[in-house]
Image 1 (spheres, rainbow, N blue to C red):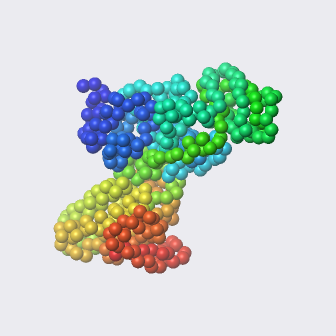
Image 2: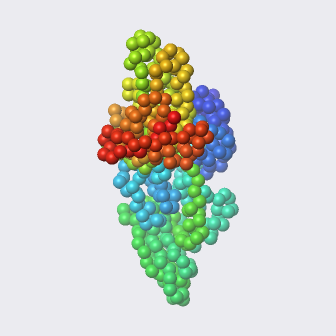
Image 3: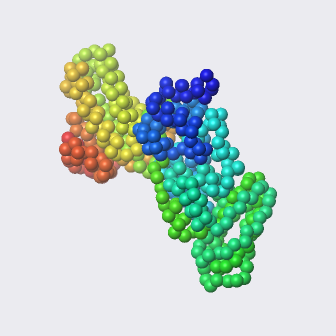
Length: 470
């Protein structure tokens, strides 16, 4: 058995067999560009597979060496990849600038960092492993744009580029080129995706027959940026590549066709979603962030639980039986959290802290946890064993604490305090959770009406609106 076959055999043992088979077939049969920065949510839809199982399988595949995992910082405006990293530890700048959009962005893990998978060159060599060999159109598709841009296929993609690109050139290191073209009466951008540099051409006024001239020097240390005013008519552009890279400058028409292209987005695997995946936490336990790294998440849902009555349980049935019951309670909660695309961050005594990408996932998990308690009651012969549950959503920081990915901020504090309000089987949640359309739909379908009340939460100055879910 060869190395590749052995790795796929290991993958089939580690994860869902149907997903492993689909990955094996994809690696063997897909064209090169479909093995570069794979959008695994697209992959799941294509092969009609469960997204969470696909995420888990690709994580195992990356750990085995079948794929290379990349954390790509994206421009929210154009969807371009501003920085590509083999680890989240390298996402360490306070701001990332996009020359094409002339804007800077503070990185957040919600929609600005995508997680993509590229086949390992030891498994199959593809053109994207040597990006300097890609033609302009394929470089834009496979290297510059993220997997969240909905690009047309085949000839439609070529026709679109013909419509929005006036001219493009491949310029090797140390060489010069001259482009001669007619400027339309539209705003244009001379943009190079390799050095992420741009020159804006503000084209307006009366058309001219006189040739206009523009010189752009590409220097790796100081990428050219700026804006010049031009008139519609002939333009001669002198391009000078003083970097040690091949550059791919092109003049784009910044009109409706380009804006329509950049506006067509699709779902992709975000860093936030991956961090809330239980398989990721299990496989990459300590290899996530540096100890002094702080990354922002604009919206994450926290679920806290605590087992009320566990002290009396130890008194009633003895340490050994009570310990087994508490362990069984943890097993059930871990299973429920994972089944709703969440991850257990940590356990503290009899309490659990879990995260979910969206409030509806947390509410679904909370309801299932509560429904699972009667079985534990029956086994414990202790009806007073109550699972206290609190849910809250909001911004937070992802940090490393004691070699483990954790979260910090007032959102976390409030979620823990809300859980403390529960004294019965009722679930407590905040307005941010209840106002979520999908979460509200789940509760409505279950025939549950959240009841609002005002509560004093330790560490929060004003009274806080919370909802009791009966």
